[in-house]
View 1 (cartoon, rainbow, N blue to C red):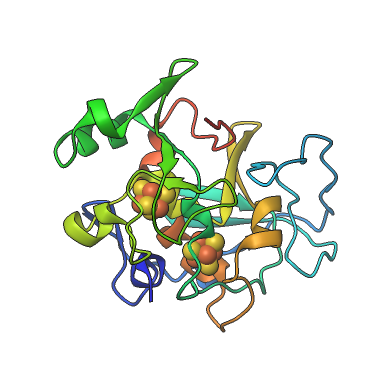
View 2 (spheres, rainbow, N blue to C red):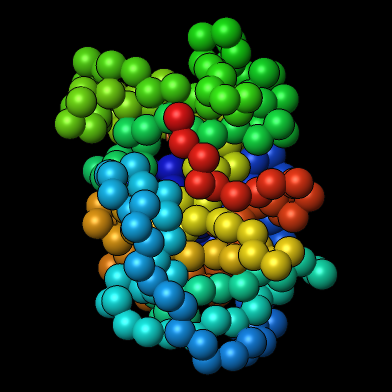
Length: 226
Ligand code: SF4
Ligand code: SF4
């Protein structure tokens, strides 16, 4: 079982911070039954970070507001019946670089050499992907700097921490009208093996995917890519 399974287990954590388990189902409030426009002309590549806003079943659905932390709501734009559990042996989401928020960079500085483990692109910091000599790589033979040959993340394995964006996968965050909107990534529908293979509804465990710091950022969107 890889780290994501640990992460969304019974005692999840966000970075170094303990997460309070809120009964999201009890806090969910229907915000309407408007179907989300799903087609995105930019959704072209394997690393696409665009949102389809629907579950793997591809059906039309409504949106709902969910209080993820006290006073912090997200607009959920995927089927509330969507379930997720990370699948052992799958490392697809670690075959790419990882965008770092400023707080990630500060925390990463305490556990890894930033000069080797990060790079900058258009003013944004990333953990780069690099060529690996193990099997947990993408078709280009590359994977995240921190992905070990056993398929585990070195950061989580050794420090019980990982960048915020790694927690968000297979979801995606966008800001619309000042609200955080949460969707399922197009690329996840195609590659993430953990969707709809368990009975753990994503909407009931949003705090395991959405670090609280997202509500404190000027730009919490996860579209930016290396
Ligand atoms: S930092 Fe860890 S969890 Fe994030 S992509 Fe890299 S190996 Fe995967
Ligand atoms: S792609 Fe999905 S199943 Fe695979 S490692 Fe990432 S979160 Fe887990």
